[in-house]
Image (cartoon, rainbow, N blue to C red; front, side, top):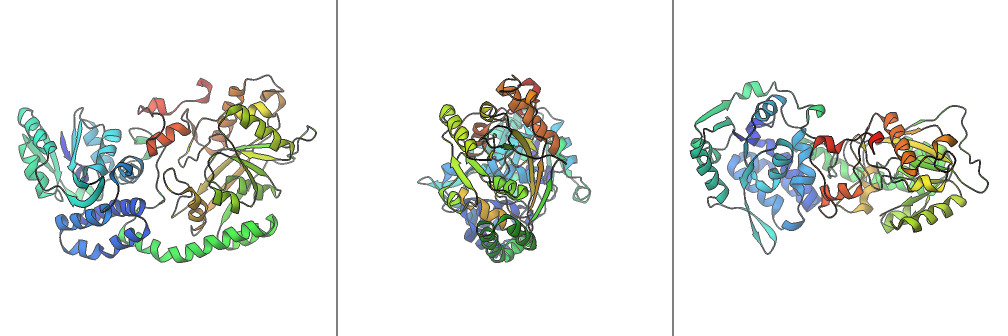
Length: 482
């Protein structure tokens, strides 16, 4: 099967439906000014027709972007493609063992998604011109080698092509006319397609990296740019309130500005250490840099936090004390022990944030240093920006999170571990304790446990450390099998 990616898989295949994907490229790779310029060019894109409009969007989005650092097609766009895939088209394509995806989009945008999530033999798209390692924003006009090889393959096989009424004439001339049979999808039926549900994804979407929560259509992008000046001011006010005022007062003012914090605690439980001169260790999953701050606010008492790769700017503005770990196990153990001797402490054993309803593997370091362990389950919801990133500027994480109109934080403080459930008091191995805490937090949130680590995340999103298996069964692993 040879299929037109946009016409066969995506539910929104109108000529202007490709704009959100270029807006994502412009925003993530080029910044706010480039995204604004693309938005201003949108009326022209709609007027000049699909082919010329596509070239305009390619030029605005890619001009001057460094090629070797662009991971939009593997780290960012797959999430937005999956949220636009029609279940009926997906079911049709996945019934074939051998399939080739063809797109009018630049190959760098679609190849990663088609190979990783659809399992195509090959992805055929347009190449972009590159000069001195930078995109010049122009599409290669010459007939590409990929199209030539594909036509030779189709001439030898009994191939079936699937197109839609919005399919590019150029694609049809270069590819689909060489198929033995070509079927066209009815656009009126596509309007009734269902969006592919998350449980039907060919592999779980665990890692993705974009500041944008929403699909940036033209109207949504206009709304974002109209909100940004207010959001920036609101973010600064919220940070100033959190830094300058005591917890009880800052919580009230933050609530008046639109931040919502939902707190759940066990009844008739006091979180105090039974060991003299030792604090309580709060162990939480990691959603944003603000997790320890929200735990401190929910408990109405000062806490300290240990961090791995927090920016100096965030350390300076943090309303609670932070100490940086070294990733040397012995040195880090001594740091945590010293911090506990000075008071209560928060640690995030995942070592990095995870946006989706999954928990990464917990480092067992926390189980070695104390028996006074309180698990804390954290979740959050935002409508416009994510407050975490793997490849962007981490110093902007709290600014983006607090710039949301009404960010919601869920804090659920669980029961303190019994002595029999700990390493030092109960004789359980540190790995058993770490897996037990992970499973308790996952159960409280309705999340799934994985064996993936920080290295796996950064390999998937930044390509700089470790490898990630692509089999769904290898992504999900119950803690009892660790």
